[in-house]
Length: 303
Ligand SMILES: [Zn+2]
Image 1 (spheres, rainbow, N blue to C red):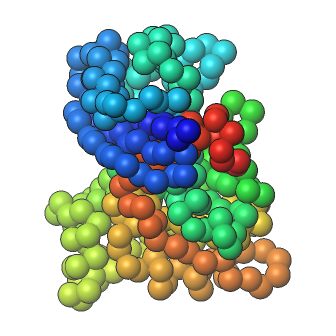
Image 2: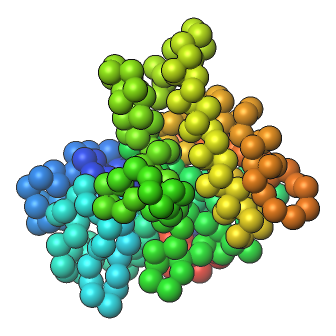
């Protein structure tokens, strides 16, 4: 008998769902507004309705969900989701699980993206992969020796909040010099606008650099060096064999051409080539990775 599972991706403003069978085929996907501004109870209502609609006519065995921040089961609370305070309400996950009436597996959204991308083909060649989200924020998830690495509390791979300059820019989290304060799309835009007095998103900065604007090139080169240092440190620490970039900023082609020589300088030890891939699943990596949590729960996937 075929098992069906649902993956959920809980974003700050929207929630997405997909249905997978136990051979990892994606049967359906849907995205709706999360209504997070109305509080936790409203979000739970949205999710229950979404799952009922998308799962109609199929017996669902389990549900996986990717959330911002990290879920600390001992306190039944999500931490580290400052853009979505409704999700940080104590008891949110337990109430959601009760409302859904199915086993609910919870994981950080960047970890879900790492799972989705890893099993989209990278797993055939690689065992140690860092997935990086370059979007509104800068985050990561790690597969080490073929396993999702969560750390002691599920907070592993919060790479955006490693400081790369102890006297550097103030991050949204309050610390100085966090990688996110330089490398998120928001920060790239802010760094450009502080020096130019003009607003431009990373795509526009890239177009201006191609058109010969020196400041735009300077910002992108600086970004490249900082990304190279950040990723180089992680390769030195973990001996990774591949990196995959996702999120809106990862669509710029420059990372796939110009990062390699910087990484080669930054990494200690044997000269080696660590390939940088662009995310294959794009926007849907997180929701698919969340469904894999449910498939692991059923014993049909291992990671
Ligand atoms: Zn920070």
